[in-house]
Image (cartoon, rainbow, N blue to C red; front, side):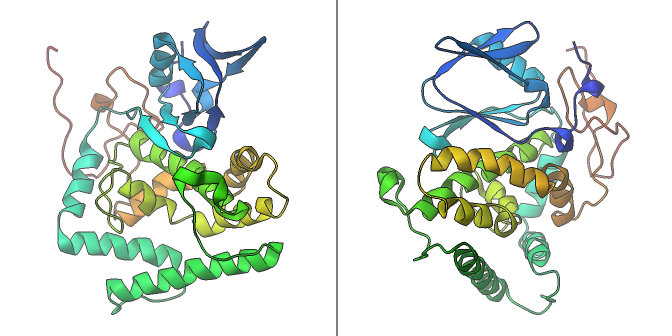
Length: 309
């Protein structure tokens, strides 16, 4: 069995895997998907996010193994679009959650974090002196321009972002591709957030949703990853569109070094650039993907002392 320090860090893991129609069970020290007459091994020690689609049954032993290997499990709808439930993260520490809550609950610090999030999207445009509403307007223009440029580049007709989850196939191919790609991106960002001990619901630009912070972080990468990919694949036709999107998301995320960037980017926008690792006391009997450095970081607060329990 691998020790805590032998498990790969988040940045070294694969991004996501979507499964449907089969039985996922433990076999030896890994998992295997039984589907009709096929038996497919699932490499859980290298995976950050497992999306379980319709028709999947999973055993108690399989869930246990996934938790041991700090792989986020999400139960999703057809084509990976709807999120019904998800597992918990891989750390017992609440230091980062407490810091995030402190920043999100103060108006000045919340606006400062939101400003750093926007500054990463406009590295060449000084935002000092601009109101949050003005910056949001700039962001809206930037996103709409990215859609228009991708549509022109790949020769796809674009009439705006418009889809209905209750009538999925009435949406245009490119809108379906965008939704499927963004679902993968949200899942990977969600896995990074809970892996590092943050809260998915405490957002700074987005608020009021259980995935607000996921949307905040995912917006840092959309125009460079999911938007051009969705238009590229929509231009190739509707056949197996959602499956092709999920498959090619792994390629695009790898090319963009997404797994390397998410956790450092979270630390940067929160204003904790030296957020390097967990202390030994926080690695209590569970895989922690930030185990590369066990020195005490500079985040405020100390872990609770070890007790008899």
